[in-house]
Length: 114
Image 1 (cartoon, rainbow, N blue to C red):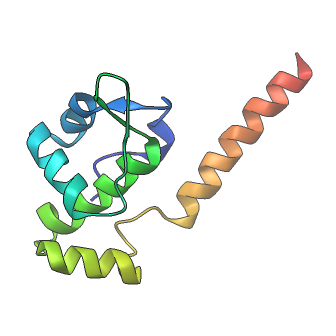
Image 2 (image 1 turned 120 degrees about the vertical axis):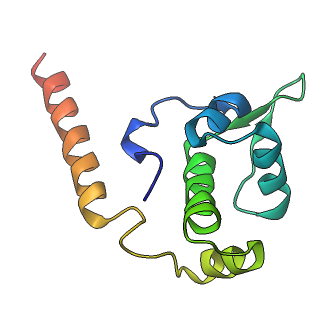
């Protein structure tokens, strides 16, 4: 099951420590996955600190699901992500997207009325 809810990713960027805490893993594992998977491309600030976007966090969530929960090898996880074979019952579903869009619509209507 997914460790995060995409609707809860409200910040523009997350530090590597925050991302590691979300998944209860070491920061070294996040750095390792960054090297292994092309879908994780954090920005780096002037100090060289990694800044992960919500898109990166969602990619890490998919990797976590495949490797840690489903028992895929790294190569198997890469192939599954590349071909889009992530288990449908575990990934973001249409109902999640619809719920998020309805939430955004509600907020926009509230802004309009105020």
